[in-house]
Length: 317
Image (cartoon, rainbow, N blue to C red; front, side):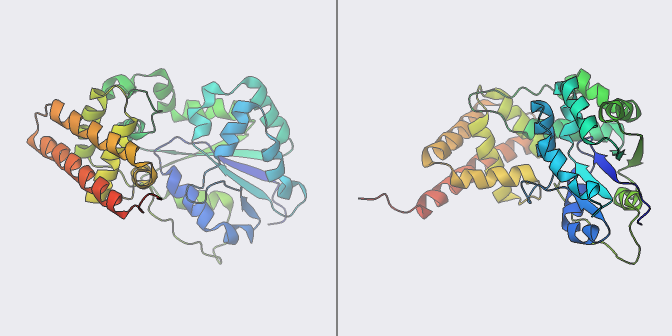
């Protein structure tokens, strides 16, 4: 493969199209990839192996880390660099033209190819909306995500619906000469491996299942409760921790917040449980199943809080 020109494969999104699975596959196979001249750029969090630093650098106009990451391409020790972060697409409108110009300058002389995955439009929109609902909300702030129909009409969301047009815009920004579009319903990992031109004699490890989707009843209940309160941070923590205790889930966001619930000060857990109970008492649910789930979430949050309180060491004398 020595005749391959140095190139960058940029996977900029869109979100909710198997991005976490692709990133996990690359990180899991990074040693085997490197043996074939393919480098998966360094990550800050192995538990979430995306290149968020690239988005941060673009926003700040500082691409010094990107310059360091392409060193193997410049010195000939590798022929391909993989960059993957869906934030490149979702934050595109926040990135100044000067940063894109700097990006193109850093990658000058290299071939850049975009790799993007499509899925059925309605399923993608609903998955994206569900993710927006459960995303972090700063302390003191309400839930700002509108109902599904209004969410789907947002200009930023509509811009991502036509993935071919979006690919053209990102190609212009990044200087990419080409792009590959595949579908989530197909073998998108296989398509990505073929783009890398990997040797069939060196099989890769299978992609793990990442970021399990949350059930519709949970989304419906959480949405109703979260919209009832003025400040959603505490309620979100209690709901996610209680749900994870009731139905352990592979959803990364819920699992991470459940761990956070166990680590915050006791007064934050008390506020979280109290806020959840007050919301459950105040909100009316037409669906008996939703009403029952809300009650069980409040009950389990209380039990979990009490267990954690018992496990705490006694205060120093």
